[in-house]
Every structure is written in C-alpha cells, then in structure tokens.
Image 1 (tube, rainbow, N blue to C red):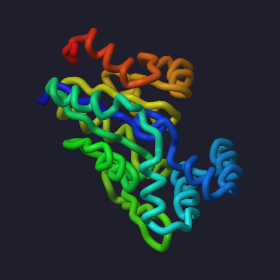
Image 2: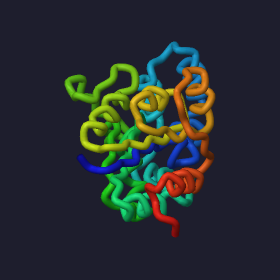
Image 3: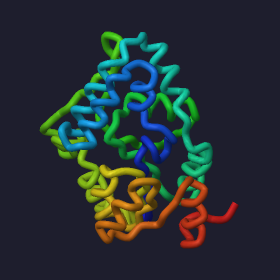
Image 4: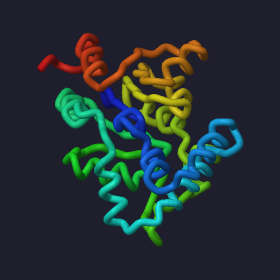
Length: 218
C-alpha cells in the first residue's frame, strides 16, 4: 500500500467562495430563492447546482475570467507541493464540477493532482453537468458520492486525510483517518460525534501535519 494521501473539498475549502455564489451574485439573483429551497430540503444538491450553472448566459471567456477571480486560500499551492514533497498524494474531491477546478489548477500551475468531481462542460453560454448514473461514484443527491471515493482510496493508502467545510463533507469524514473541518462542518461533525481537527486555513492544516510527522518543517 502507498503511505498517505490528502483529500480536499474545493468550494469553501480550497476556495474561499463557492462558485455558485459567484454566479448568483453576478448573473442570477433569482438563485437566492433557489438557495433557500435547497437548504430547506426542497431540492437535491445536484438539482440546485444544475439550475445555477445553466443560468450564467455568458461567453466562455467571461466565465473563465470569473472562475479565475474566485479567491482561494493563498497557501494551497505551497501546501500541495509540500504534501507531494513528503511522499503524499493530493486529491480534490468536489460535489461541484471539475470544469472550474481544472481552470484554477492550471492558473496556479498546480500539477499531479487528481480531481474527483462531477464532469462539467461549456455549451450555449452555460456550464452543463454530464451525469453517469452507472458510474461507481454516482450519487443521486450530490452527483458524486464522496464517501465511496474515500473508501476506495483507503484500499490504496495506509492513511487518508480529508478536509472540508460543509454538509456534503460530513459523509466522507466518517471514513477518513483524520478530518480537518472548516466553518459549518465543525458544528455538523460535533453533533454527529465524528472526530475532527478544527482549522481555518491550510497553514493550520500544515502545522498539524508537521506535529504528526507527515510533513517536514520548512
């Protein structure tokens, strides 16, 4: 088995803002009502995202510009490099779409990172999701079942660390060897009695992994 892997959610964890909020605030104010319906349990996560992503109505150049303006934790590129330099593999696990994640990785020259997410593509001035119900990671609610991905990775690695920030991340946290939780995920995991390390930034995560010997001190 390989020694260890670090798996991170994207929206709200690597990025400091969910892509759907970028769209709602800039192009689709009606999305605020959909957000309330989604949070009230009246829409599945994937239904909400599909509605938002197909309401952009902009040329791809503009969409890419908006993507590249998404604020990310500025320490992430260095953290990923540090994980890789210390024998770990880095994965991104997102219930959003790989369409914008790959643009971000390219912009920051982040390499050798595997992305598990819903497949997305640009067409007719919007971002569309390509769902395959027969895929082994498929989830009817989220598009991708993060728990299945973590369980699969645990067959390959002795230790799997996970970082997330919101409700979808509470499910894979059950299976990860260690979970780093930001924002709302901290309260959710506390209520479920699932162990986690509270963090605000990837520098916090790095400090913890240095203490545990996974990362060397700079």
